[in-house]
Image (tube, rainbow, N blue to C red):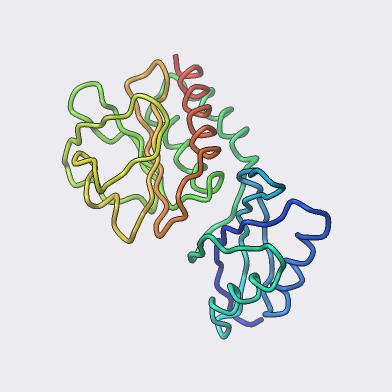
Length: 223
């Protein structure tokens, strides 16, 4: 079997019958193999934003994938980046059950959470911080930036996008390689969850809303 690379592509596409089929056909013409499609936002004027994971032969340039998608009427590529792992939106249900089972052992519960969030939110990494006094790391996913021992003065009171260019408290390591960031408090606790995407794409309003809902649910379970 020919070696492949995986890419996460964010595409704006007309929300019309046949559009997704045309997109799949165009991707197939450059030997791309679609692994998953997720609608992340519905836009006005019958448009949607989809996150699509595609396997592409290593001998095929990623640019050819962009060119193929742009042949579909109305399709526009917002971003493309290499992607490892799998997408599992439904894994959050099992994750919440695991958190409930370990709610009296916070570090263990948070380890369960950070193992799932990257797959369920097409993110690169997740960090959970206890911000009661000096912020300390509670748990982090495998690809998260190293803990440099600093105690950032975390300023997150509601789910939102973080901007490393204007917020001095954000550690430089979080923003490396053009990472986009979002965060939410875990309601009723002293903890904040930070989610990063290396190389993007940016977090959409619908994704931030979902992150905030998750923060409220997890906080309720823990308290």
